[in-house]
Length: 88
Image 1 (cartoon, helix red, strand yellow):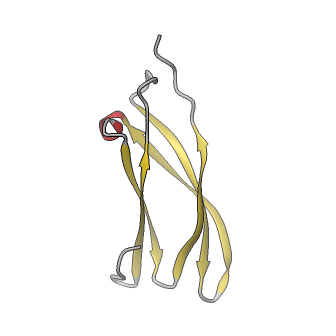
Image 2: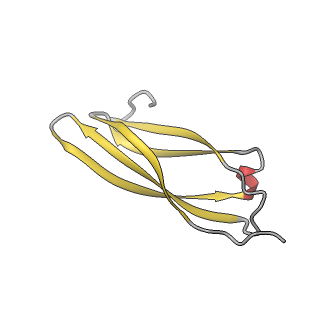
Image 3: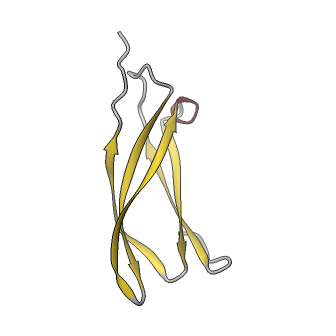
């Protein structure tokens, strides 16, 4: 979590990606979150992201979501990952 700025913070994560067996140059994946807020019930939601071979050649991709300063991520997990065609 970043420091608060304009009453918002940024949650970031670095994911390992191995797209070496894919013919696709990009692909879609979702991350499922459980968000905690000071004066509200926990909220489950998903965010969609895209990996690209230019980003994943190093094996890592950074993802981020914006949160208000009274929010925090309690849990997260990889959700849907779009299938990609395999190389021969």
